[in-house]
Image (cartoon, rainbow, N blue to C red; front, side, top):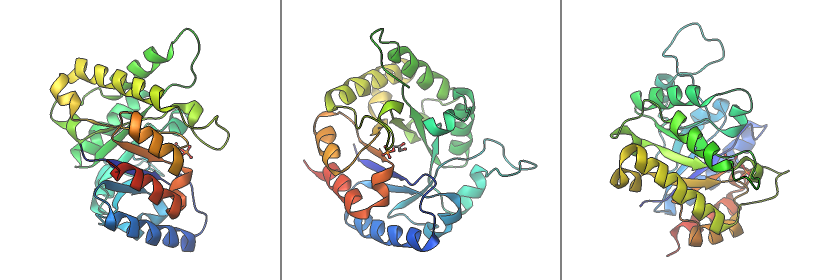
Length: 249
Ligand code: 13P
């Protein structure tokens, strides 16, 4: 399956000039790569990559509403008209602001209708000895895919991001064996929903403190088709390491 590496810049960088520099660096990397590279900048910088295919342009969020009186919101059709091909929905940082899986599902369906591929984020907040995280992952996935059918699930990317592994204050990346176990679990739930053959074709990526080093280990043993990268996507050299890890045999 073709690998996909998604850069989630979050609310960075502060200055336009810096955004331009990161984009130039990332373009060089994307040109040489056989994987799909997606850059999701904050909205003010989206135009810098309008219509780009190497890397593909992505957005970090969107509204499920079509148009109208929704101050501060951005629609799928507007994004599509700027050449956006992917959109992150249900990132844990947005779920923490109150976004439910029901809303995530509506966004995913609205994106698909506008010919944009949703990157649907799921992941447990914590792990404890009762192993409740499996239920949490399962229901996030099932509820976030309401309305998605056997045809358009193929357009979706599932991003597994355990919340406890995300960001500067986290404990760091999940170990590869645990990533593999989660990926198998997600595939199993997808197989129950859409059938094994279709589930096999859905790209599952891992996110959470991915850098040059961890990406190699996880690519080797984690059973995923790529990564959703936060901090390291702002440093083209580090990002290149991750992209290279995905092309290694
Ligand atoms: P970090 O790579 O900075 O931990 O962020 C992961 C993430 O949330 C990407 O969406």
